Image (cartoon, rainbow, N blue to C red):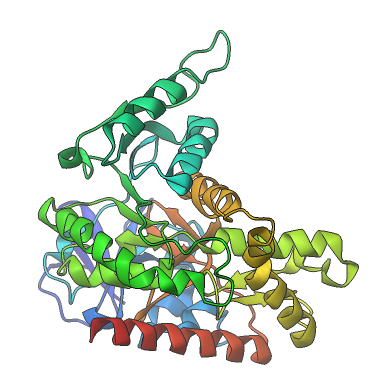
Length: 407
């Protein structure tokens, strides 16, 4: 290990390739540490939280980062301790101005701004208002319709517990120019949602072309504002739209600033069927969800005793659950707005594990993760071979979809 000191912070790398002041060892009581490494910036994040010693030695950013490595590497005890405490932040020095990432994110309540108050946006807003007391400082709302903004400002600020009138976040009407004056921007705009009765098509992918046009404008606006927060994508199809944001932000937004919120409801739908059918019940305590919101979803009945057949049955039920809602004559937006949207967003802001899609080596891949002061942490598990092959198939499909959309 090579140790450096820069402006009172301690850094380290595996190779002696930086011109900073060198130190022989880390001083006792070091509370945070920054790992400098070089990876292809087109296929890797700018920063992430080091959660396992293997993170220091991986040559490429790929699916192996979701797996617990059995390979033992010598890492000094003091660094191991900081890794266990999640106090080590990896910084990719192939990015320009990477030194600006040599800090730990502050904790505390965050400002959230929400774009579009349609079915999903307004339902998500209700969830944020009711659940965000511990994590959300305020919620800014914007829509092309001034009447919608006024309506929801009235309704939400007249929603309150008695006697303790500051326990829920205040909802504010904002102008379009203020959308990126926040810690998290939530994109809920949508165009061309297929009507009920369109069950013979992949409803989410039908929306891609039109919603990609919409999101480009806001990705470019985020870049122009030099936005430093999280760009949260809720509109369908979540994962391809995340890729559009990354491309259109022209390198200003780091990949880890973009998160897709679609997997939460797929997990909740798997939970729904796991509670209804005993053969799926292991999902409630041992299951996981991976991949996109829609086709190519991977549900694992258990990461302890994985059963490929049962997992694929449960996956099919989760994927087709939205069609069951459509058969009732209604659009399936309430559970997604709460499970994928409000609940997952609040958990993100609280630094707790949740389901969302994050950049991983060329694709936005859904899985269990959390955002902590040292950065994004994606859960690592002991991955059964059959499960890994399913996830790999999905991962490759997502990478190809991103390439196709960029052509």
